[in-house]
Image (cartoon, rainbow, N blue to C red; front, top):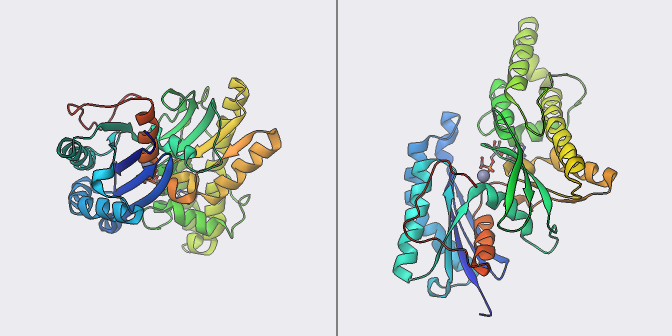
Length: 335
Ligand code: KG4
Ligand code: ZN
């Protein structure tokens, strides 16, 4: 077979996305964001499912159109099977299964966290196996040892909050809207990251903990706003820069430890938090200083997107890893 065309569908949280991948090249990656959650300060699962239902057909249509591909020339349908919000996952997975059945095309079920890792294989500058990937998103924080496109091991992960949650919850304490991660990034750019100090968790091995830093920030803000009610407003960029620096330091210390322990010299970032400009910069510095090779997906492939599902689908396709129609969505699933 000369050309393999994969339709990827992502619907695990609050983004409805579809992408076309042909022979490992991304031809389109259309993402519909759900604005409806902003006013609630977090994703409302029922509203997310309903928005996915409204979006899924037009989103897939647009992805096909942008790629200049007709539905009949798609060779397989890849979809996010797990983990995520069950109602959201069900919309994408039922749609993918129906499409596979009606078109008589193979189905490929994809693990969302593996797909974040696989985003590093999009484009020309790819890591070689084995590599380590620090996957940092709103729901997960993991260090993954990637042995091949289908063999991955989680060698470290968070025991409580994810790094993205640490950003979002800190932002909430500062009165910033959801999701606060990108806003902390924005304000931190003009701030002094050494101005304020927050407690650093002492966690064994390659695991993480972020619930302590949130508490430490809460107490700090309570103490300071008692003295000066405008403390947050007057020091916003320095507070954001200090919080961001602490989260980055926690993440990269463990990644460095993992690299030294495993002897693996190719490192990647993945997940929504890898869009953070401070993390991207410090990660590159870590790699340069240690003579390691560092890779970060393009911005649009860091946060939730279907291109990462489509590229994973492509690699599963060429290694003949298909699912049958009995596969169902799952909120949590092992790798
Ligand atoms: O991977 P993702 O899009 O969705 C999940 O699978 O969770 O990650 C979303 C997370 C949110 O917590 C968001 O605040 C965070 O990524 N995020 C950022 C930035 N952009 C997105 N955090 C810090 N700085 C950013 N620039
Ligand atoms: Zn994600």
